[in-house]
Every structure is written in structure tokens, then in C-alpha cells.
Length: 423
View (cartoon, rainbow, N blue to C red):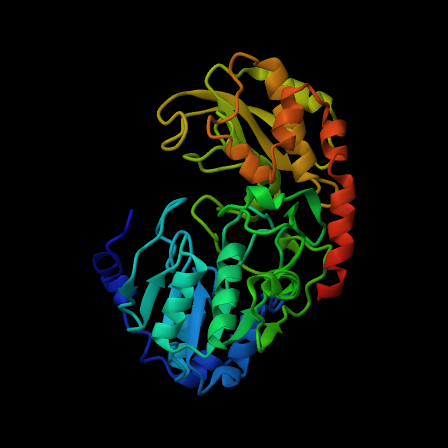
């Protein structure tokens, strides 16, 4: 559904002018606050803002971003660029929109941002040809990407970045990634995408939990996939996130969490999402319509046995609570569901994908008349092939399922090594 952006954003609170703020104050790093530690990790956006955005001065800049593209002082990068006297010539909104008001599978349409006067183009779901047309229309010579990813192949922002990279290469524009930490850390896990199952939730062959930042992915995409599109970028500039280590999850970065989408409310959600998003491919509720999506799972007629069975597995880094809930939207809206809630107790030991496989295998065994896949076999797009579904249906154990992708995971882990930027 297209949101009426003019009426939505023309409220007094949002239309209050930022442009009166001095460019000097906007370009500077946020001041130290007595008694409060500064963030241990410094995203790429804060580094460029501290330089007064000089690296982008004089360029015709397009920005692909959403609400996560904020500085440490919570000013959005687009607003900061405007304040610094280097306004973008266009902004591009991915799924959920530039200002983030749309639900899953939605966007905000095209409009002129009332705060900055910058035209905003809706690029959720658009093909590379259309994206290229928009870059040409705006006469962009530099494309900037600043969106916080959550580390899963089926989170659509990385594929918006990929399309933007191909479009930028076609028009001869530079591509700049303002890098941010991967909130679930730098370890890769899960199955590789079979190209035959390419879709909007997985365009190219990477594993389910890629364990890379968007800057690292951009380097990987540029070298491994753009040649297959018949293009190459003249310039790819990744402004790194200083201070981030591959073994860090978001809670250890010192940064403030900005929900990257309406159903990713906390860093805890991001930790479980690479696994529990698989419930979107089932008839079970993945917790949309609750305050803890992807952490709460269930369906009508599910009872205490699921939690008891999962607890008996003694899985590392996670605990389960029996719970009952009524979703306000999504699957089983308005119906009482039984199920469980995951709590990650040790992120360093928790394996989101293996845990999700155990959850699905156990649910299928306990509730054979209730558990099922979605009729459209969306699970195949999420897992990257029909292998997971057919193995589970054939009664495979969790060890057998996880073992089936070990070789391809090892291959991806080796292949990505030259493109990594953080230790």
C-alpha cells in the first residue's frame, strides 16, 4: 500500500525545520556527555560527518537509506548532508520506506521529503533497469548506501544495495558504503542459495547467515557477481566502522539500536532472526503482531509440550519459555496461540539456524496434524532450495539437515575471506 507521505510527514513535529541548525554543528561529532561513555564502535557515517562530508562535496549524490542511517546524535545522514550544505539530489527508499513507516512487503511511494525538499524514489522491488533509469533521471555521479543490515540473506536491504550497485556501474557513478556493524557478529552459517531459487529474499548465492557487514558484502558483490551482469564499478569506497570486531554482537558495540524494520524492534530480535524467520515459510505464527516478533512462535492448539521438548535438548546459549499470545495482525490475528518464546542467554554459543531446525523438526513431530509448510513453498526461497523442506518431510534429524550444507558453508567461508575488512 502506498502511504500518503505528504499528510504523514507534514505534522508539526516532523516538519519542524532542521535547516536552521548551523552546518558547523551538524558536521561536527556529537559532544561528549559527562558521565556517559562514547560509543566503542564508530560507524562510517559518523566518520564522514566529522569531516564535514568533504568527501562528498561537489558531487551529485544519491542516498539509499532508511531510519537506521543516523549519526550518534540521532540526526539522519540526509538531514546532516543538507545541514552541511551538500544536499543529495535524490533519496531512495527500500522496503518499509525511507522514513520506515510501511509494514513488511510495503513501501512509501515516491514523494518530495517535506523536511529537506529532496525527491524520494521508492525502489522496493524495482528491477535493475528501473533503478538505472532513476539514477540517470537524477544525474547521479555518486551513490551512497547507509542502511543497517541484520546479517540474514532474506533481509531485503542487501539486495536493494546490489541493484543499486549494478545501476551505479551502468551509469558510471561511484558507490560509497557507510559501513555499520553486523549485529549478529561475523560468523557464517546455514545453506547456500541455489541460483534456481533466486528471488527478492535472495538474489545471489550466499549463505543464510552471511556474517559480513554491508561494506564487506559490497566488495564481495562487486568482485563475484557484477561481472556476471556485464558491468564493473569505477569506484567502490567502503567507509569502515571503526572499532568493530567479528566476534562482537550489537549489545557490545556501545551504539543505540534503531529498528531497521517494524518487526525488528530490538537487537535480541536480530539474534534469532537468521533462524526463526524460517517460520514465515510455515503455517505457524512467527510472532508478527506481538511485541516480540521472531522471538515468540506458535499456533492455536500448540501446548506446553513444545517448550518441554526444546528445553530437554539442552541447546547452547538459549532458553525457552512456554507462552500464550493473541497476534494483533498477521497469522492468527485475534486468535489465542500457544507456543514458546526464545531468550538468547549466550550470543557467543547460540546457533540461530540450528536452533530453528530443531524447533521445526520438533514441532512437526509433536503436532503432525497442525504443522505444515505454506502452500506456496515460501520455505524454499528462505532456505535457498527445496532441500530443507524435503529432508524435514522425509523425517531427517537436525544433525542430518545441518550436515547437508556443511561443505558449501565451508566453501563460502573460504571464498569470502579476501573481502573481509574486520578481524
